[in-house]
Image 1 (cartoon, rainbow, N blue to C red):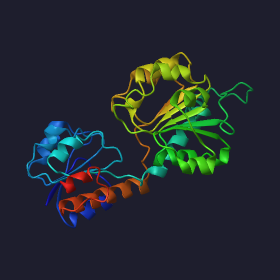
Image 2: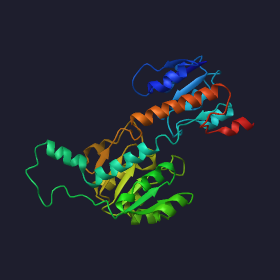
Image 3: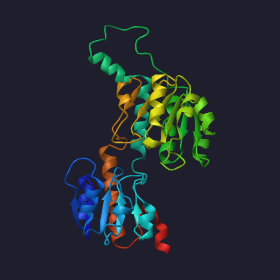
Image 4: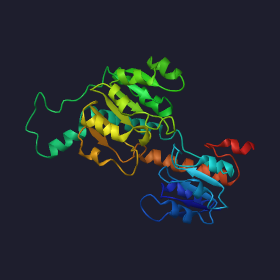
Length: 322
């Protein structure tokens, strides 16, 4: 069968697909436009896409032969799953394999903001360092502080577990009680306002939905401590970016570390002017191992779906019972 891949992914995944099927890869760098995806899908049986690709009902219904959509990502809010389900097209994702990589990035951002690593690097490279000073580049301690986890799923749990060496108090806001965190870290499940008011560090790990859109806005940012650090490696629209800019400028919080943005790849230009925010290019899962495992998982999902089988990581398995 024929598969359209919207971007070049690690070779190990492409080779797996080539063993069974014919593939066509979008030839240009950057995010393909919806019209380019529709054009690439012509005559194709499968679509392997990225989180940044707009896979709406127009795309899904553009090719009558389409039998499978495999997302090279954990999230799939860019895909109209309802439209795919209506046509009984399986949709899959790649959960689990990027848990450690993403949780490590959350910690990298947390430390970098708390200890002003990027700011200090710029300061030193600019030739402004003339010797040790008692007030030079003062940051925030991490050990013995309170870490708030918004969304205690796989990644949120991994972030909390990595706090063990720092003797931190763990608070978490989640739909479900996390017995593992309660048992191993003596964590406490709390409502969001309490978490924001009491945490020194807040790390976001929720999927994007109607309920989580702008979950953190001006009201929530004003609840946080003045010395607090906010980290987001989940989805950009979970934070109201304009409100965050205001909070950083007015020093409502100490700083923020962002790997995702509300309208990415566009970024609020005011963020570029601020020293108390660290910006990453949506690269939390960008390790050689994680991206290769994602490629294998996406390929295996695609191969199973094109066989008419339930993909190992199907997000709409109910279509097989109808």
